[in-house]
Image 1 (cartoon, rainbow, N blue to C red):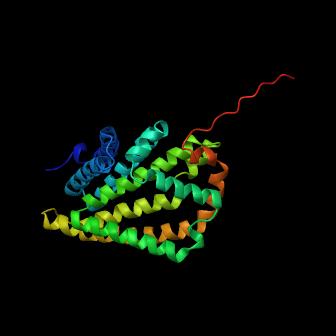
Image 2: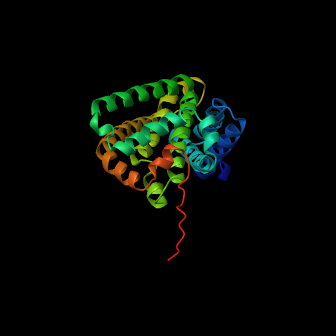
Image 3: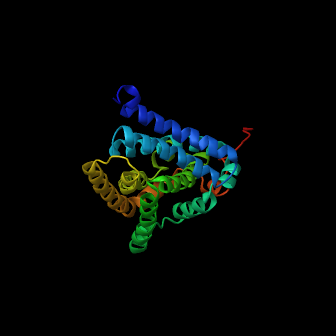
Length: 261
């Protein structure tokens, strides 16, 4: 009989968190842009499958959420102190930073092109779900690691260039991005269900259905929040950051003055 703390939700949430930390550390030390998300994804997928087997689809998705949280904490910490290595080892780190800083500088965000924004979201979601269904969530978790890495590299840049660190800690990870990650986590678990069942794992059909419904709701909420909050959130964040320092990927330099009066 499967029981005890080793088969409890807290055990798998802790294991997911540690997989996020260890997978990032292993991948980053390779110095390889491809190996980083692959190693992260393999460890994340391993705990996902174990949680699915021992617990339920819902807890398996929650375990991936814990993996993402562990990935975020360790990667922002490492990226903050190693900007040059981050640009060299993280796919799209420079490009994503440039696009986000352009948003902060101009004040013009996705709310100015809602149809194009929605279309881009649908394309990204379709690719993610296809990867999840075709690989029982393995490739989609790898894609998620890649996305988390360049987003966390951007947040680390903001913290390095922050005039008001508290504001950056609050707004650096956009609210709609947090909702999107959660939505993708549960949708990836739901999309993995058919292949996992074919491979021999049991399935709670009602739990999978609830994950799918929650994921769709999250995707809609993500887009609504992005369009509604992009402008005010961007203004608040821009005021809290030295944008010139952020573009140069450096820390804010304190001005040295000599008072001779």
